[in-house]
Image (tube, rainbow, N blue to C red; front, side, top):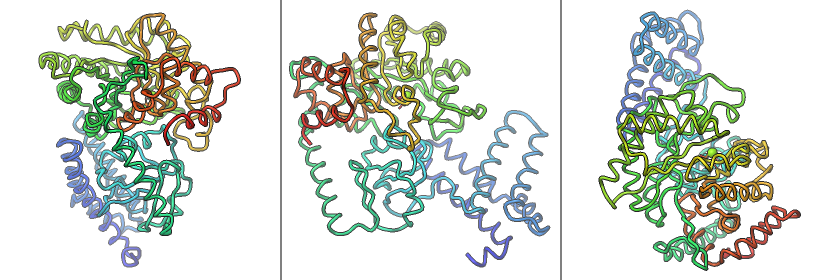
Length: 543
Ligand code: PEP
Ligand code: MG
């Protein structure tokens, strides 16, 4: 306000107090949603924000004529330099804490919003972008909808919104400047409509659409206990993608046949320190327990690019999606990989001890680009199995096929593992060289493109010839029409956002395998086109 703007010392105090309040609030949310350790870190940051010595030093700077943000920066940096002189690992951690709080206070002083300030009631969140780390602290019950300026249907903001059953419109350029906070809004995640101050007629129309959707969901519930299969009874496993413990409830509710992709990196996104073996094992055991008798595929943490994790600090990269991510990062940080593999083995051990009440664990490596990388990873797995004294024989191992080189050489990958799982989200971005996060290029390439579908057909054929089954775990698997095509191409498992399972199950039950094969032939024919395919598939399925 005006008083604060005219008085730099008041501005400094206001920012420090605001930072402390935000941190205490964030700590309370973290305690519930992430864990006590993260909550404690937030509490310790709140203590830093109200440190009297820091405040006194910053106030001296202001008195000497510096701007509040310069003065705060200098004060924090003085303390950081002091700690650096002391040295040691603990002091390194403390330095990181001070840097975090410094940046938060400076952001507040310069009018940039920091992290998550929770609203009083449910809202439509309008933001430039939504990173996985933002959502860790945002209680889903406060989210009615999400509108982001960047992103595409396969960006993690969309995947998370889908998992939570929240309508989302992404790639809505200018949204944050067009929408003033506090206005009534209506959005349609199906059509991408965003209406500010909607008319009564528009509201009526959107409410009608939402009601029809809810009705269809209710009618599909009848399929819950039926297995995934084509009309002629060919089994197709319909499993869930899991990114948080909250996803388990939905997966159980819809009758998911296991988890075809546990995005383990998302389980730890709120953390600043790497989770230890036993903590990971405990969480994996909980996930296994949710799927008695079914396979649960733990993907080793796919860190990097769109999914940075604070506890892995590497240098900045010009092109992070083409950089050190997924398995490549693991091979550079092997302890992280070994810890995780040990955790899966321990969870597996506990699980088999629990008998039929638990799922069958499998491990899958992300972003594999060449057989040599897979060999390195399998070598590490062998080492961990020996070190743990575990029986590795029962552990299925798979590879994500999401890099074109892996798809082209799927035969050699398949000969080394039990299954291949096509990650269409990344495969599409790498086949078309179009960043999945960049709205400006999101019209370039999609999974329904014949180029991608032919590649998937080739992967499934190479897999089959080399003794590995093929699944799909990208967003394409949850698209009922495309799911038919994928099955026709030779895919035998589809893993998707759990909420998509009922509609995909319903679609599959309407067509025989031969009919799916005909659709696949149509979709990959020399003159095939994406738009025609979409129209054709839409005409076959209930709206
Ligand atoms: C994919 O790339 O298709 C995939 C399933 O993995 P993620 O979306 O987590 O990158
Ligand atoms: Mg991927």
